[in-house]
Amino acid sequence: MKSLIAMIVIVFIAAYLLGGFTYSQTIYVYEKREGIFQKPQVIYEPYSINELKNPNMTSATVIVPAVDQEGRGVATILQVQVVPGTGKALVNIDKLLFWVDTQDSIRTARAVAEKVIGKNISRYDIVYTIIANASVVEGPSAGASLTVATIAALQGRKTDSSVMMTGTINHDGVIGPIGGVLEKARAAKEIGADTFLVPVGQSVEITYERRRHCERIGIADYCTIETVPKKRSIEDEVNITVVEVADINDALNYFLVD
Image (cartoon, rainbow, N blue to C red; front, side, top):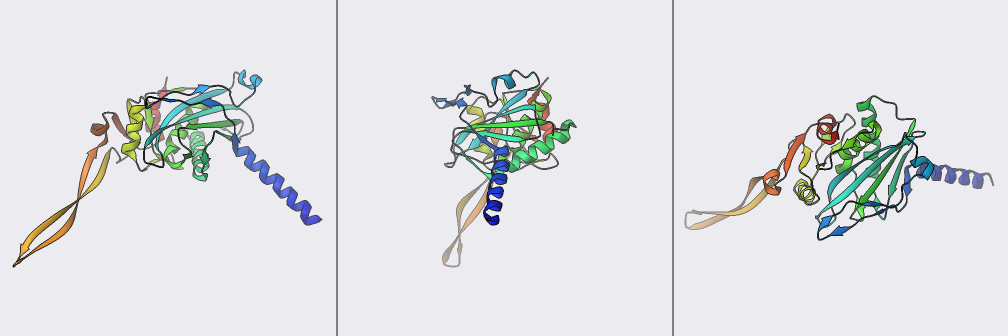
């Protein structure tokens, strides 16, 4: 009997902890017309009417270009809302496979945001709403954008919708490298970005070309396969302004609107 009671208590505690971090509800209509991703239409907010009227609630939205399972560029929309609360991080998703690494990125984004603004955020609840034209969202490459959106929401500032970014976020605010930069740059261009921020060293993509080289040695031809590296400028390839940013403060200079 005691073991049964203990098991019930453990299940309730686990449910409470998971419920504090994952919160799922359909709130957006997301459309794709003629290959161009449209901005979402809000049909319900994750808070009640009384809370929406709270003058202390602030929010920020950024669009993050991503690559789906087939290597195609897709748009991920991140909305962050801040209201007075008890320090909870809530995630509002719709029909997405939400990976643990996305939760890790959110935790890091909150911690870095707190350091950057020098403000105790334990008195606020932060809601992360994620909308994507895909079934899977991976967190690492959206880490830097999550951090920017968190800072903007906490400070009640707007973000420039013509600026988009890709990159991980480290605990010290450094923006780390990711893959698929060229595809993400194309996605950013397609959905209306003028400026695309990337980690240091990733404004140029290195590809490798294989070629056959033959030479005559004595009476026979000897052939080998050689690998030749080629640099491709993402800015030239996609026709979008590409800027390398080292840390989150660099990125904020481009994102935040005074």
